[in-house]
Length: 145
Image (spheres, rainbow, N blue to C red):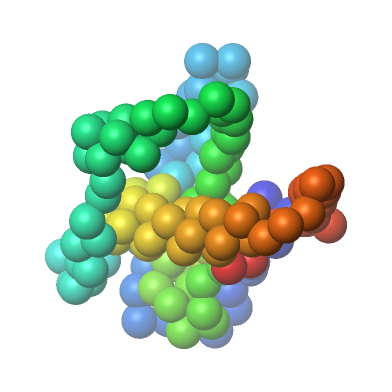
């Protein structure tokens, strides 16, 4: 996680330190999480309105082609600002670290992620409506919106 830029070592004092939670995945690998109970109490959640199943199905009416995109590690595609990343500092036996990407468990993570996805889809929708016959999707790494 450190090599991929998801977390970074912290050496200076921070206002928040979250507990580390390690969970075993079904495949036997370990998932590193934080327990942000106290931090979540202090966060003012934006409450982004999620589309309902009915909203999505009505927009799909008449569609001929469908694509499925896997948002695996989706939250990690969203970079935190430096000041916000210090709020995600957590203790480990090897020292303190902070998330540089949006971690799972933050109360507003789903709202922030869905808002970014909706914005991206809006941009893609307007781009897809321009008259061109070939579309190429590519990325050199993490998608930033």
